[in-house]
Amino acid sequence: MGIADKLVKRFDNEDVIRFSDKDNFKDIKSWAFTGSPQLEYNLGVLGFPTGMIEIAGPSRSGKTTLGLLGMKYFLDSTENGVAVILSSENRDNKEYALKLGINPEKVVILKIRFVEDMFMKVKKIINDTKEIFTEEEWGEPSFYFMWDSLGATLAKAELDTMEINTKAMEKAMEKGKQGEIKHAQMGAFAKQAKMFAKFITAEMYDTTIHFIMLNHVYDKMSGMGGKTSGGGKWVEFFPTLRLQMAVIGHERIDEVEVAQISRVKVVKNDFGSRKKTDIMILLGHGIVLSDEDIDFGIEQGIIEQKTKTILSFKGKLEWRSKRTLFELYENGDKLLALMTKLIMKARHKQIIDERG
Image (cartoon, rainbow, N blue to C red; front, side, top):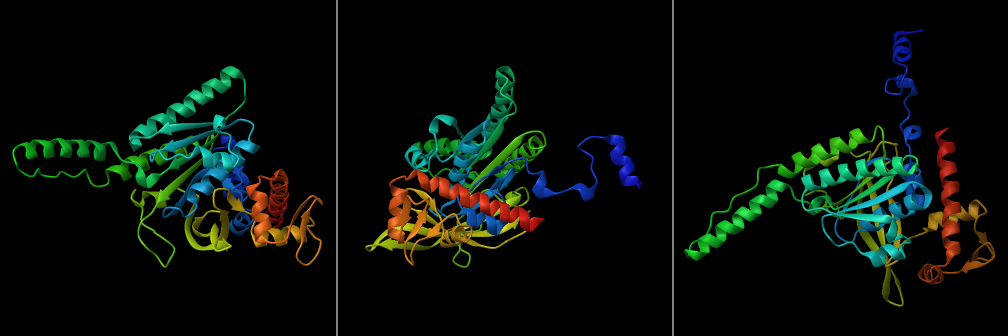
């Protein structure tokens, strides 16, 4: 028995292990399906893992849809799931969430005025939830936080500086002068956000937490939207998964745009693959199965190819074109959810088999 084995044996707890026993994939406590089997296969994951995840991109790139779908499937598959939206933009769309299949009765919204405010509210939510679960004997809670959005959240110092400047301007205008503009301390937000990220990371050792950060970025990069965050560069170091999204095209029916094609580029992935994925988002309804998902479903015998153009699921769900497939989504056909779940399970089995 070598020194590593002897030390591990002496500690005899899960905080001290051999490096050879470390497996990032198997160590994940919970996965939240994204709504896209092809995206997960390309990433080599079974959904959003526990940990910090950044979904970045310009406005309307699909990052909110992806984050909300993760929340939907988290709530659907987790008996003791607690879903929380950290809202700094105050633009939470209940009607869209309902169309995605989210029950708003199960979601808590925390209005965030500045990052320090978020820090304390998240800490209280976690502590209070654990107390309630203990009192009710509900077991251990799991959390899905979605921060919407990182780039729109201020630091307390930035908010205070705005108040100071406003008052100074009012006084100067009374005297017919122009007030001097003060600036918040450099890196005020990044410093506090980094402290918050450290807190969440420490909580994750003992608590099951999916922490999704939506990050609105603003400069251009090779047609992929923005890459620079208003929240500073600290965010690069904490996430286990960093995705960047941008719209690359649209699907039209009768010359009307009905869906967008969003490209998901991988910036960081602790689970290996950096293969990009194009997902289709039916406007107002969320992600639809891709051509790759459908082809895989046919290969697995989940979907039947009845004729060259007609596809069928369980003999009841049929479509022959994008138009008729989209109509099934728009009508909320319940068999679509079952078909998607079966394709997801088959994809997940493939991922696990390929990992050995």
